[in-house]
View (tube, helix red, strand yellow):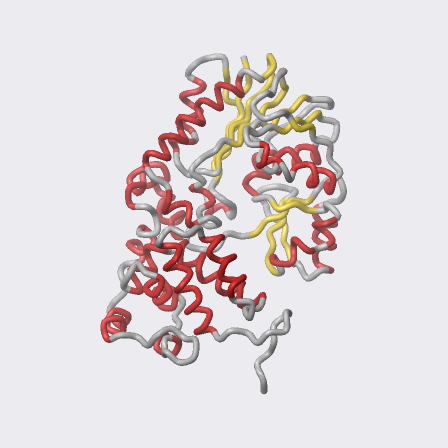
Length: 401
């Protein structure tokens, strides 16, 4: 029987050929190539690779980056080949049967590789500990406390995909039903009454009618949970100060259709998707000119630039690029942004600070330093880790007094 063709009509790559492609890509990434660019260039140069092949190779690459330290230990080397050998060992796959050197398979195992794969694996705690940057370990242990081990283990796995049901157009159950007709299976998530966790068909979302019609938006459950701590009176003036693509502004517009919502970002390019997203969602959002936002607002959101440590399951490359100097720069920038944003809060108004970080220096310590200046009272906060079923996240709501 001939091999089953993928949806693009090409014969699928063998599992071994997919591993070989991932090895080459990982070598390029370890030498400094951005992961997304490397994957895009590989797909363009290898048109024979169908959608299933591209997805499989991508998964191998990101699994290896996510578990770079542990896979290198299991595979015997911090190289593309070592990481993929580690992946095979972690998944219980027979590397000897895959590394044959035949066709497009990786070269056969060397004697040293075979000996290493046959040796006892390091203790489990040593494996997940090695998947953090070494310089960050003392800080993570202190900040996470008893949660360090379970969070470290959870960070080795792929992150779930979440959708936010757009309450301006549908209910969560209604969105789930429409998605199901398109082969996208979901389940409600307890962190927010708008949150749907995608359990099957995630790669179909962008082309689905549910997405095109604005019934759903991609948004992590942690962000959705944080926004549910916010209540707005009709006509409330809201500023999303670091709006980026506008996900949080869109969520508030859906929950509070009578609010007056303005989005701002210092980089106009990051806001380019807000207008089409708002149109699709049926929301009204005003865009402020970068760096020139004025006025006073009843609520100012600050989704601050941060290390992104809570999202490193999604962007594993980033954790290996973070340095102590860059973290210090981010902490200073967060303090500066908080000061600027605070000046835009009306008397009696609120300031909502958020990061997708697990690090206290960006979270509770940052807020404590800000509140110590006086004039603010903390009224709510949220701290989540991947053990809660979402990204790592911190949020605090402060009221001007």
